[in-house]
Length: 271
Image (tube, one colour):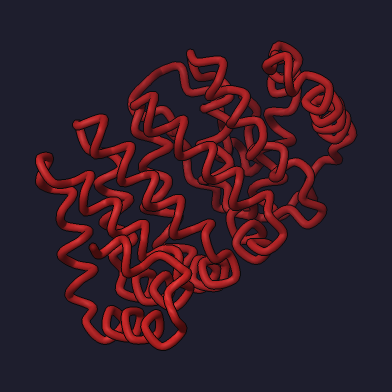
């Protein structure tokens, strides 16, 4: 019944009455999102929640409520069904009305990307694959230009995707490339991003040359691949300026971390 009421096609007066009721009763969103905590009914709550995502005013209301962070949390549920359904709902709210979500993400970029990056760092194949795919859909869309600019100028975000380029899964490696290429293509790189790319460019080029996409995207991928490799080769040394670069351990305690941006003798080191 709830899903039916939220479908488009109702008389304008009825549609407005339903959406206005939900906007003025934000506790409904809490009930729907927290429904993911109960495996027996989670999928039903998810279906109703995605029905809300059809309406721009309800998308805005949920985003402003902060409950989107709970969706990110449930996207890492140990239950594959719950995790997938929560992520499906998250995708609907971020991509259903892009003008609404683009503005919200840009205004809440620090908190949102910090939470979202936990999916990319999770080490869980499904979570990482879905998160990388959705992130690429967001950042490659011009309506999210402000968010993309913020994201690709953060060196911590760069380190995440550089490590995913070495993932054991070929699928995740290729998906990571589609986000990584934005860091390289950015004409106004932050100093730290520029330095990390410059210090690691030789190994990055060697790694990128080994990437192999699916047959259906091979031609387009090859064009991007050559462009990114060419840009890395032509990358100029960043201006030598005093920098306080924290030592980076992007792979946790692993000794195989291959990204360095620390300082050595006053200059940023190479790996």
